[in-house]
Length: 497
Image (tube, rainbow, N blue to C red; front, side, top):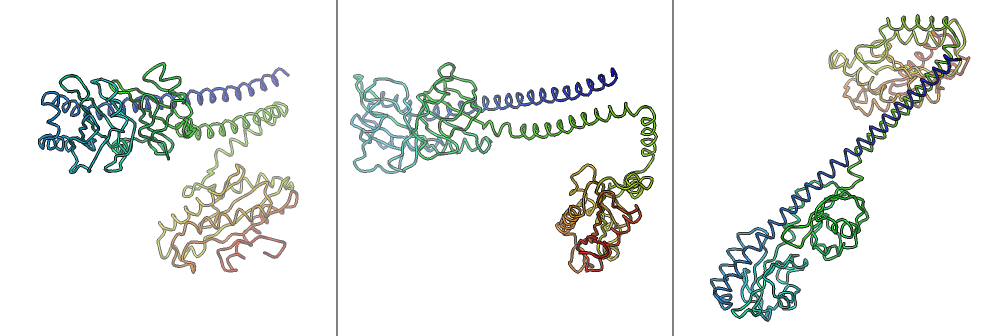
C-alpha cells in the first residue's frame, strides 16, 4: 500500500505541476504581450503628438508672421497685390496648408492665397471669427473641423486675431489645414484591422479618425472613459478602455499636445493584440490536457504493473528491448516498414488467440507506377511515393493507426479498433487527397497520379489468421485495380462492393 500511495501521489503531483507551470507561463506571456502593446501605443501616441505639434506649428508660424506684418504695415496692406503674392508663396511652401486668408473686421475677404476670391465672400459667421471678435488674445485658435466653402474639403482652421494701432479688433488671419493630410499621415502606421488613430480637440470633439466612421467628425467622445478619467488625471499615458464609438476594447496611448488644445489617441484592439497569444494558449492547453491524460493513464498502468509484479515487469522489459532493436521506419517515406507492420500484427494475433477488438486493413497501390518510373525516372518515382505517403499520413488522426510502406509502391494502413465502414471512409479520403495533389502522370488515363485501395475489416474474435487478414486486403486491392483503378473496394465475404 505505501508503494501504491506513493505512485498515486507522484502521478497527481506531476499533473498539478505541469498544469500550474503552464498556466503561470501563459499568464506571464499574456502580460508580456500587453506590455509590448502598451509600449507600442505609447510610442505611437508620442510620435503622432509630435507630428501634430509640428504640423500646427508650420501652419501657425506664417499666420503669426502675417499678423506681425499687418501690425507693422497697417491693415490696409492686406489688400495689396504683394500680400496676395506673399500668401500664395507661403501656402505653396507648406504641404499641409490648404489656404491662407485675411478677413477684415466685418468678415469680408481682404486677401487669400487662392487664385481667385469669390464675390461677396464673407466669413463673419464662422466660429473662429466670432471667437477672435469676442476675445482679445494674441494666441492661436484651433477650431472644429469644417468643410471649406471654396473647395468643399474637410479642413481644420488655425487663426489669430489682428488688432489695429489702437488695439481694437481689425480682422483675422486664417490658415486652413487639410484633414486629408492627417489621413495620409495616419495611413503610415500599422494598427491592425481594428486599431484606431484619433485627433480630437481638448474637449473631446473629433477632428480626424482612422478608420473613418459616418458622422464621426465633430462628434464628441468627452463622455468616454479616456476623457472622463484618464486625461483628467494625466495629459499622457496608456489605458485599456472600451471605445464610446464602436464599443471595441482597445489598449490606448494618449497624449495632449504641449502647445495646442488637441489630444491624440492611438489604440490597438485587445482582441488582435492577444490573438496570437490566444492561439498559443489553446495549443498549450490542448497539449497539457493530452499530457495530463497520458500521465493519469500512466498512473493506472503503473498501479497494474506493481500488482503484476516483477515477472510482468521483466517481460515488458524484454519486449521493449526487442522492439528497440527493430528498424521500425522506412527511410524513404518515414512510414513504418514491413517488419514493424508484421511485428504489430503479431501482437494482435499472438499465440493464435482471437482478436479482442475490431481490426481493419487498407492496402494501397499506385496505379501504373511502372509506367511512371519509365516516363519520369526513378528519382521522380521516389518523390511520387513520398507524396502518396504524405497523403496517407495527413489523414491519420488516431495514435493507434499505423501507416506502412509494404513494399515498392505498395502501402498499407492498419486500423485497430476500427470497423470496415470507417476504414472505407478513411480510404476514400486518402484517395481524394492523392487526386488533389494532381501529380502529372501521362501514363495514367486520368493524366494524374491515382491509387487503388482495398479494405478488409473484421469484428472482434472474428478475424482469420494474420496471413489471411493481409491476403484478403491485398486481394480486394487487386479487384480495385482490375475494376478500372482509382477506386476503393471493400471485402464482403467473397464479393466486393
